[in-house]
Length: 467
Ligand code: PHE
Image 1 (cartoon, rainbow, N blue to C red):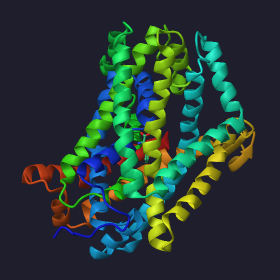
Image 2: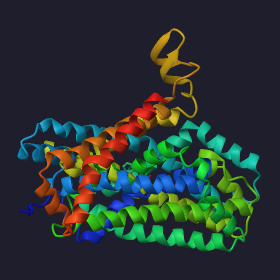
Image 3: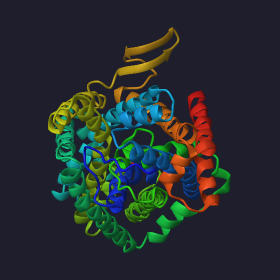
Image 4: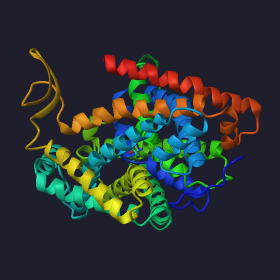
């Protein structure tokens, strides 16, 4: 029997709202900032193909697993996993996987907020015309000045955390659903406007070839990066999708819904690439700029083409909205968990967690300036140091948290979730939730969840650690 329990936190009005919410979570800095530059770095079309394979063979099975666990459990990820484990006669310690994911999501939020905060600064600088006619050196210096100023970074980080907390505090229906209904259409409109604009730059085909020209010899170069990115971009492995699954209507088919989210996320990434590269080419710049693409190259590009000021401002509004709809999904699992556990008001719990993430995020703020020399995980000639000031190797605070979450916690969480859905839940339960009628198709999807996705994660995880 499909359970007709509802979550105490509320429920989405329809499966469309789940699609909006999950897509809002998935589409973020990962699509607009990371995907285009990674595609540039790993050989364009070759990377795009590997990325698609990873999305469909590993990312989507995890998303299916998370959604069905959430909807069956109808509670926060930690409690859903624990309850379903007991029901299936397994150890309630499975809930630890969700606990780890929840912490990972809060850690991601702490630095995501700092980067998203940059877009607030850029909206104002762009709108104000500060980038008009700017040179590459000028844009580099402007970016350098921003990251060198802890007060300015802290201001934007604070503001972004407040924006995130504001939506979450209002609850699933009045906060999340209502804002998603406005922000998601806005996001798609902005993206299409930018795409339309990039088509008029006269360099559209150049951007197109850059993204899609297939270089078979580079196919394997970016597999690991592609798989890691598939996790991050689909928001899987931390319980965000599981939390949203708990608010999903009973009768919606999980299979087709999740497929829609995966396709939308991929389309947005590809469209962002198609919108950005022609603009970069139109300004006569190089696309292989790496992570600086969005904050250094693009302002130059927008500063030197017709209507660049308006389009550039719109672009950073797009980045802000995309990041905002992702950041709320990082906070929701922990808020839901603490509300269930402590029976306190949602507002109080949200405030406490926002404060916590804000504090941890200050570490990231400082790692771009005064704290840049604080290094963690240092392997030096005299042995391993967890922390050392001014060490040669090692990672600063921001890099450490980024590494810990995306390279370690996310894959582990994702692995636990697919294994749970594939090997702990009964086959009948999975079949019932997925509601895939065709036995062959169900067999295929079930096999992806049980075998292919876990194997893929293990292979990448081990390869990454050995690098
Ligand atoms: N998917 C988001 C992005 O692409 C990031 C994210 C990761 C969101 C984990 C929620 C949980 O930017």
